Length: 236
Image (cartoon, rainbow, N blue to C red):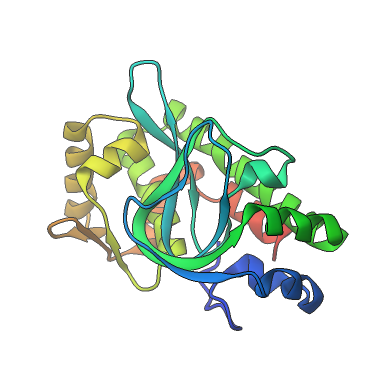
């Protein structure tokens, strides 16, 4: 996914891709909000009340297993929007969505969001394209968790986060990384140290700094790239 700067009023790639008439359907109902780390965007199995177009920061879509352990199944940043269930015609999801890296964005009520989709086939089409791109991302996360080493998966996740933040610094703890990667903290620590020794990242008290992005992409191998190319094909 390209890291090009987003032009326009809003720092969100979906909003930047909208036709002016479609943007007008949403814009009058936006509320600019600050989204701190751990701020919930959706609760599992509860009706979605608001939709968030993230402009800064990263939200995690997290599934809970039978053992109570959580694992991240998807990422939402400045390329996307929460409320995937609404786009697909439902009003809730079994997953939770909360901010993993604090930031901000535009908030709109679920009712106004759905009314805008109902009134504009072109808006609905773009959002469906995003839904498809997001589902490709989640399917490749499953592939990564099944086939990739912890180090490869960590490299993939850092590059994906890098796609969605300004600059090279990403505020992350080993606890959150363990949830993101579906593994235990000792394994995460080893992977972080391995990438640091290779000169790909630098870490300091909950902060990961990308030093060599291309090296991270190479280390992630085939785990990174397909969902990003699909987003570019569908959204541009």
